[in-house]
Image 1 (tube, each protein chain N blue to C red):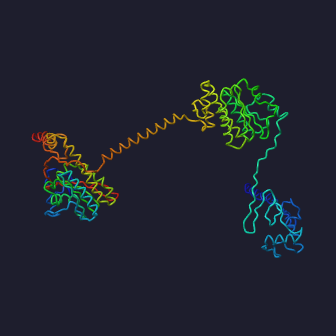
Image 2: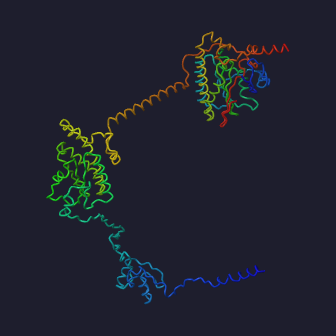
Image 3: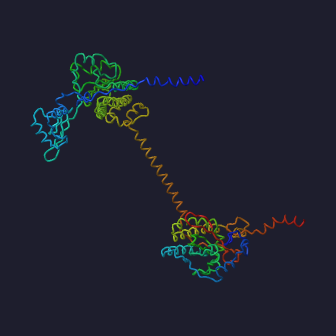
Length: 402
Length: 221
């Protein structure tokens, strides 16, 4: 009985809070308040927006151009529209958008000129203006900037106080130049200058090279941004005198060739540094074997005619595998061996084919063949045959013997 | 050796099949006891064109020049259902006379190729002399070689290939025989030493030797 009473109480109590709780619904604004959004997000004066103008016209009882009084859209030619617009005066409704005023001439405002239609139906396409990346004009190298370049011996292998190269490429080039200096007899410094900048007249770059790098063979590459043809290589005096000028000319030529492959300054520096590194490697090899007898030979020979040795730095191989010239003698012998191998296989195949063809030939030739006579006792009563028989079906799918 | 009718093994000197009693007399009862005249290329089914027949005749001429003792002939027909190819081959070799076959080419030297266009079967019937030169295995290989052409209904080419293959087998066998001396050949013929010919074995002496121990206990019993 108590349980029944408790259940009754619970059942009667539960709906009370449920009934008491009310869901708060959002209240909508009145119709008169809503609809206050302006075309253009309020960026333009309200008097210039077509909605406002249309509304004003509606109030005065005039329909917008191209719109009938009943609200239908009329076909209006641009000329007529323009005439109407001009005739209607400054207060006439005209569309102003982000592109500015649109009229029948077809030349939208902005940087790009529009396509103009000629009366004969052809279109006059405006000439595209090539967008050139504009660098900030660089100051002449003088004063403090000159000190940054030439006052002290460089610490880094990449001398770029003006940050002409991108940071990432600069780091890559620095790392590569450090690696090169570790592996090669020649150290390589790259000095990046602006395309309009020149070495000050009071700076003797050869003298500075001698002052800075007289202790070890060093090459200083003066690179002008995006002007690889102006690049200059400065060698030690001892190196320059030990080899003919043609060698250095070829080194410069090959370096410039690599730099001309690309247009971007960081890539140019990277490629030229790699190529110069390779050339310096061979230059060092050349200098090791240099003597008076070899000078004449070296003068007449191209560096690229020298074969790549197996101990060439692996990084250089990785960077520029196509630059290494293979040993032509080895290639020739390899080709010759290959030809011999193919010829041998072909000959063996030909002989084998000939033997097989000879063995498998179905031709009757030679002298008549006589078999020895022998008698066989007859069977099954047959005078000439005892029923010796071999048969086969040639029905498709049935190859059984009979 | 098998019976042409029931394909059961038959002894080389049996007068009739032990299983079905088939013999030449039974064949004559079915097909007739008379002699028949055959062309060398007997195309009763008319499935060879003239060019094919001419090419095949040329091939057979070449074979006959190479093997003057052998007779090569072909029979193409549509057999009734109660007559098998092996029976017809058995009867034709014993009752047929090939036109132009001179005395030097008796039917026992014949290699007769038969083809039944109804059941699409092909077979080789051999005379006594021919079956000693061509084994069943070689004959079956020759048929296998010609089967692709037969399947493609290139009957003339198939028969040419078949005969050329048989000629090659005969050539090989002839070269083997030529190397043997008379004594070796005689020994081979009697089956005493490495028989080069596919001749029936004389089982009687060896059977007698093997059966002797059995007879003694039987007699003693």
